[in-house]
Image 1: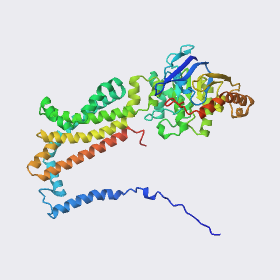
Image 2: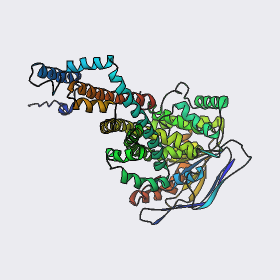
Image 3: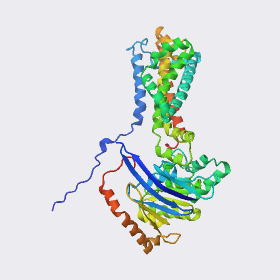
Image 4: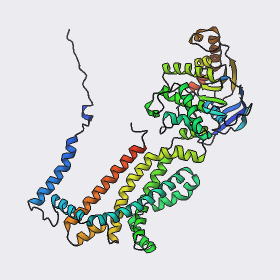
Length: 266
Length: 265
């Protein structure tokens, strides 16, 4: 299924009752089986947009819709959260089962699907652990397995590895791409890291500072599967430079501008 | 050239809190021994303070004669009903008030206004309404448990991580799923805090109620023994209360560890 984001705008009211525009007329689509990165400086409304697509936040105007063959019993979107958002009282297995429970998948099918995605994410042998017994990298594997298990039309990832250390992050990016090579589902990957976006995505959608609007869509013409050697490839460097050129001045303004909207960080 | 060497010393030494395990036991034992000595030497008349060995002997007597169990059974029955009713209604109201803003608006001011009333002050009213029998005593215990349960459950519900709630919703959870699978487990630690508070209040109110109007029960035993100057029996009643308090605390702590496994490893 493809996801269409059509002229989506979002306006918040801050504590003093002023209107703050977070997103302005955002227009794009994620095609079926496509890996799209959504990139922008901090405070550009990336997470806001993701939440709107996930149905966790209403848009002020515009709409998001999914189109394609009907997929009965399968949800449109599932989210992998930056802070993992695992249920601390559930074991690894029970966390992965959560979405299946809510979908009404029961019995043998639930067991098998849980098993499959636990294995796919390298969590075999950790099923009975509680989240607090796992490292950050392992916790986010649970987050990914939980989202994959419901087999959503689009997988939404909200800066999934930004809470991890640099080495773990690099390894997890590789693993996510490996998993994606087998599942090949639509992915929308939010990040503020240009290298990460270029390395992983088919297209990078660059958002401007608040109010976020689409500055440009940069296609990444690197072959798949992606390899570490691609980091030095001319295509990679050119794309990264082009994106940096687009957001450099914006990031500078963001750095100097102290006007952060409380509670709407992203 | 003179060389100076400054060795770094641990400057936090005075902040250390060593665990004096044996002292914990010795302190309690010491108190009992001192008590025994004070009474043995006749320094304090046994009419005012019977010796620990005397209390123990009387306790064994009362157990073998079955007298203690009569009182204990009546007290435990009232406690069980009162505590049970208070806990169930308290948790239900606490969850409702914490989750639904409509319930919050209606119930919160009522709770705020009634919570400060010492519950024992309501006993005459409850006796008037419910009669002098068991119901009024159960009701006063239930009331005493209800308030700490509501307040701690409410606090626990309000403390539920909004991120986890959003995560649950993103995976298709509706209102009841969110309450059952996110709100309740999040609130459990606070619920147990309320249970422990409530257990203490329950004991207090039970004894007070039994001393005002009862013909059996530990509270009645203490009051009657006092009136008859049977200080040893009175002390047996007090020791039983102390044990009840300790046991309920241990029981609840054990239950807490068993239920909230995700925090304890």
